[in-house]
Length: 203
Image (cartoon, rainbow, N blue to C red; front, top):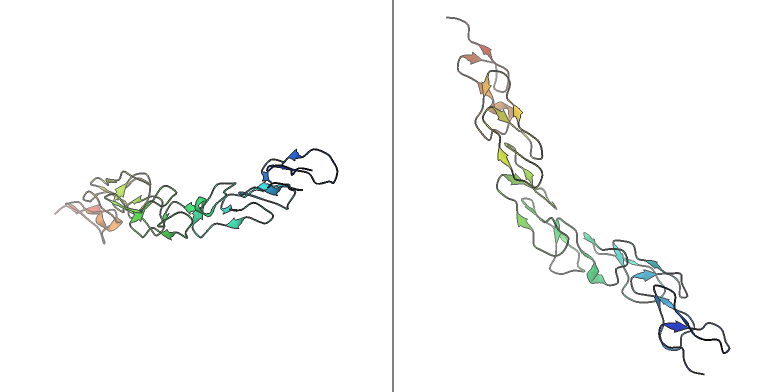
């Protein structure tokens, strides 16, 4: 008898022909069953299921898929540790390593090992950010661009949105970043900044 070639198998004794391994499985020369391919998991002989996203297996055979290192992602069916790459907002020296968060004030929008970059002007980010948000006093969509609040408006928090109009009879300079920046116009008064102001009395 001659050995079944690689990629085929025969489980029973006798003169039956060797048959091709099922999908997502492999065999070596002279095999009586097939084993799950790298990137797939299941008992020898199948069936074999693709490793789910965030896991991998680098060798053929029975077993389970291993979880990728912390702060990494992978696609379904990943078949090597290097398929685990940094999630957005995280970076590392190479694929397959645990990734560290981008520091505050930096971001990384894509998956992979690229370096984190500094936020554009007038925007900020927190630890592990995939994009930057407009600073207080500026408005725009997350990721920018960010424009200063015009005079007479303000925004007190970072993030997407629009500038709020100051209370009646108050004024503010461009880029105002808190309600208290809205102060009474000349000829008007209030108990404190940030409140609507009333006209000074005659005389």
